[in-house]
Length: 51
Image 1 (cartoon, one colour):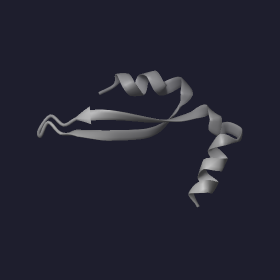
Image 2 (cartoon, helix red, strand yellow; image 1 turned 180 degrees about the vertical axis):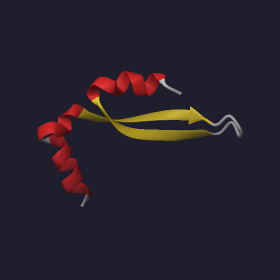
Image 3 (cartoon, rainbow, N blue to C red; image 1 turned 60 degrees about the horizontal axis):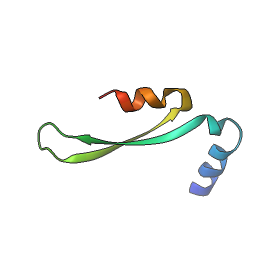
Image 4 (cartoon, rainbow, N blue to C red; image 1 turned 120 degrees about the vertical axis):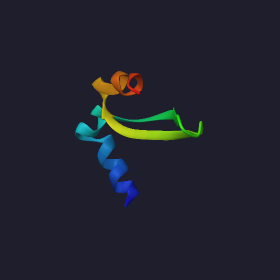
């Protein structure tokens, strides 16, 4: 099933989106976690700037 999802993202309007992955440090434990999100190409900069 994953192949179908990847194939649909590569064609048509799927090229307008990007999967962004950011490392976030937990204020309580100090451990790092990864936050991933699929965002439109014009909002990538906003995703990495917000905390």
